[in-house]
Image (cartoon, rainbow, N blue to C red):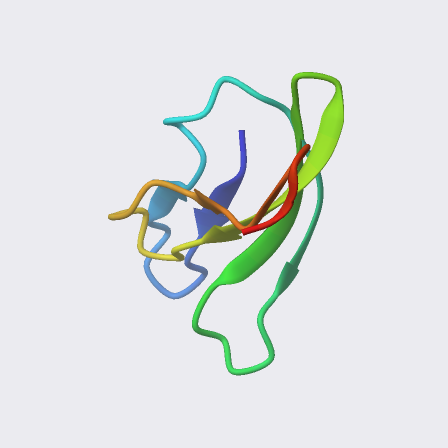
Length: 68
């Protein structure tokens, strides 16, 4: 599970709680509006966009069928 710790407040936000898949690699989007992550899905590595507030479910932008 990928979590975010706000250093100023100590607040912890679970970002990928809704997924039952491991997160392998992640990086912040250049403007800080979210994260992109490589997440294993049915034996494939798919790319997901993750909302840093934890309010939205991570959204797959690739799948074994290719880019959406």
